[in-house]
Image (cartoon, rainbow, N blue to C red; front, top):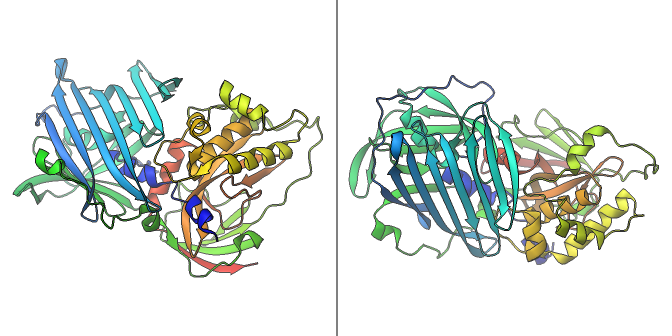
Length: 488
């Protein structure tokens, strides 16, 4: 495998993992405990400003600055600014995240403004609650899209979930369910938080009695230690990530980037076999262990999953359907634009029209679009909430960016398209990756990073969908084990 291809596949879940550590972005359990209401006896009156360092195995890679102010009628206003230096595939990049939120007395939110900036990419989301709706505007600052989400109850912003659990006044060993909204994926989920036994921990040279809360999703545990006034003093998560309160002087110290851990490598999974030519394989069987299969899409299409054995068979391209053949109605949903896959935008349409001809068959359109993205998008790991318009403009990105742009172009050309995420084999390891699924008479995998139609059988689908669906990877990363059983 060439060095170029090595650099193409970095972890689709890397950005989400960092956001998840910072904001507890987890999925919901099948059986949710009853929600605990606001406890008016529990007050939050903490210091108006705090700083936290972000560590990976005790090496500083980032800093968080938070402000917390009381408003009228028991409401609050919070501001969180995050700066991180992250090593992916040997390239260190800066990531800046800011979230401004107005909170109700029970720590649910009434409005928010979220921004993510990296070296090339920008993402903006803002919104407010109006009766039984969450009204959102998301995308780039110059190309926001309006989304209206119906809500049955007012959610919490994901970054304030531990304060919400504290405000609910949970007793020890008690678990509560909360609705949370994740600004980076625009998804509303349920999350369970359990109060554990109190612990005394060292913070800024002092021993502090804290309330400990933990959230667990599919074995991925995130815990936080809160002071008696409700302030988060420490958090720990997966892949050796943690945060801890520090003084302003400590927060301003330089990041420890010497020998910084490459998160792509940390999140990857070793293979028990060397696969010399994955593209030549027609079938692979892999034993998967150490995961909860619920929430994942391991079975279906070209994948068969039985008793922890996954078999992936390379699909055959179908014969072209007759011109007057009607597609099943359910496929219409995979032609629709979304906040990150802006298939109806004039710039996407114009680019697509320069790639394909009106007389091209669906398979012909797919081949031309995948080839164009492969040739014209520079393969470089970036930290972003990827969206098709930004990728078309910057012409740079990793598998995330390739997948969202390919999906947008395919949908714009009238070819139903989805995004799949999972693992792909490279040089003795399986790395987190994203690719596409296109309907051309049947569903066919397509990888614009490797210019493969269909994608080779080492592409192991774990989840399918955009935004919040990819959060299901959090229960897998750092835990999943793979054993290649057979190939042919």
